[in-house]
Amino acid sequence: QQQVKQSPQSLIVQKGGISIINCAYENTAFDYFPWYQQFPGKGPALLIAIRPDVSEKKEGRFTISFNKSAKQFSLHIMDSQPGDSATYFCAALTGGFKTIFGAGTRLFVKA
Amino acid sequence: GAGVSQSPRYKVAKRGQDVALRCDPISGHVSLFWYQQALGQGPEFLTYFQNEAQLDKSGLPSDRFFAERPEGSVSTLKIQRTQQEDSAVYLCASSLPPAGSYPPYNEQFFGPGTRLTVL
Image (cartoon, rainbow over all chains, first blue to last red; front, side, top):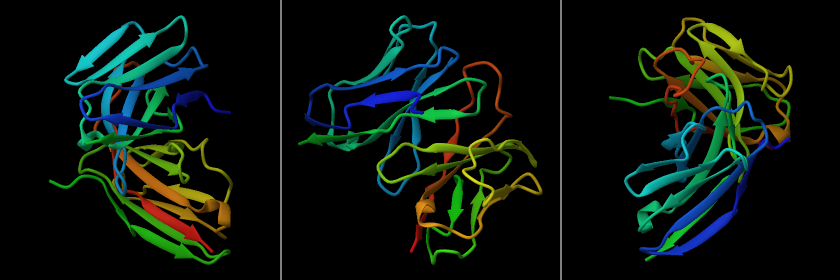
């Protein structure tokens, strides 16, 4: 059963544009929501994370928006660059160790 | 200043063979995790160790899958009698402290994975 649904599956954005990836979850026990970036042949790397008592978190060009009532959260990448081209995964945890990942979004930023 | 390393990076096995995948976590990291990542999908949790203790193995797909971490450092994921559906990338991750009960949880550092292909 897919507990974290991610969209879109793939995304093409012009350099300098905004990339937006959306996720929805079902389990209200989730209490931590990280985003991971994965390049081909590499393992995922933590990008940014948020707790559900916060509606927004920004780190550099990356922002998470969180809507607890709708059980949705999204990643915004401002001023997208070709080096941002990668696969992005949203995830959710409760209890600190069992991470549930979304299916991933392949982002391509055109130069 | 090594990160998490995994070996081999690629493994091809004939159906029915046993395989062993190795994970070397970051030195001193207490927590160790194994994930399975099918092509085009997100990683799926397999099992979690705190030091040498396997605290959760609920994600292991069948009794053909077995993981160990006997001395609390290096871990091995063993798959017996491999099947074609076992083909995937197997990721290992480690984090410094024990996995906590409250957020913010400790960052997991992932290795590059082992790509297993079962023919």
